[in-house]
Image (cartoon, rainbow over all chains, first blue to last red; front, side, top):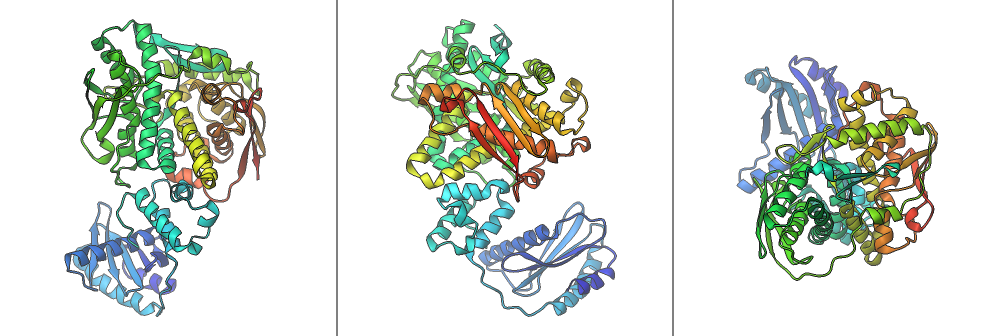
Length: 191
Length: 417
């Protein structure tokens, strides 16, 4: 997969990086970044996946969601376009800020077609909610170094049990989720 | 009387006093982590209650001594002096509008709320107020201004900068008073120290810590009542607050949720790590430190001596290096800490080692001495903290002696794993 992405990317000079995120867990599936770029592909892919999920839920709340949705972010340094390739994969492309929008759209269409063709057909695994909550906390909790201890103390779940979050009981997962919401200051987790 | 003139020093034990009441310096990273741990253990409502009571008690002791030493007798004098001292400490600029029946207080810049918004505001939405310390201070100041008994004023913070309000606001209302416990003052502290012992590199540590103590004499709140120094917000603080919150919370968890004891003990130790990384580390990288000691050398034995000197300079007590083998072992000892007098006079002799803060600090000193490339002047960011302290542990710490347990001194052994 990386080879296909690399080939596709080499034809677009203003492309800085591509990140393919496997959903629903927002895990990095494949990536390419231009030489000299010091990004953490795992982190970027996870944030892009979460962003698409939040966007999907927001649009659904507005009654205007469609599977063709695309998120475009214009920052000072770059132009980011996120697109759902299928229900299992999200692709995020980062272009130089100076890239003309028309060219970006044209290149993006070709790029996404090539990436889409190279993606495998997968059966999404329903990973345990406990595992996904802990991974979510890892990404967003304000003190990630202390998050397991904080969850243990708040939720009354032993540190040993939290080492295997996939094996938590239903009640433990409920308490874990409540605690995660409290730590993050949100009403519900976007998982 | 100038506030600086209220300072006192028990030099051979590196303990500092204001109007005869112990005080120390801590940074906002430590303070926020400390309060967060209390709330993690007790929940937001009970956590805030415990923290407010502790602040109320600590500032009641402290302001009472300040007013006595300064000869402040009228309500106007006392309210004015209390606000001035609070801002001088770096706790924030708080306007009090009170009568014997209560009143209100407000501030756009309190150490806790302001620093919380700076550190976490872009990542977490907070709904609970963050300024239990200012709340307790406001209640204590109001009571003492009008010669009211302890707890005759209760206080609630109903707007907070940390919850994205423009200002923090407090409502003070009448309550039922009760008798105060005896103050932990300098005389009490002197009963719970051991004769000072010389450690490794003692002469240099004494010289540097004296220089730092002298430097800290000039540190005071700016026009916001905040102290922005060493790349952090620093505040002069009352150990009574830290001690009461830590030990009341620990004891409660031990009584009611024994399975959670390992987690809260680990978090209390982690608070010590956070302190050493954020405060000690930023002091070591500061221009002020370079002016005092010179540029960072990155030599582990230097870093260890410097950290020990910083602990003394911040008023943490007489910490000394008993033995240090770089990369292998540290034996840190204390003949005094700011925790022991409180614990012994309030609770008696502890059944197990209780100095969680120094346990975490000792481990962090080992990590800072061994793993940080000081000559490259790294940014001490949260990500760097995670990089250093998360993952497979490289050291373990054990407190082998504890003055709270009645032993002659406290000892902390850090071993490489």
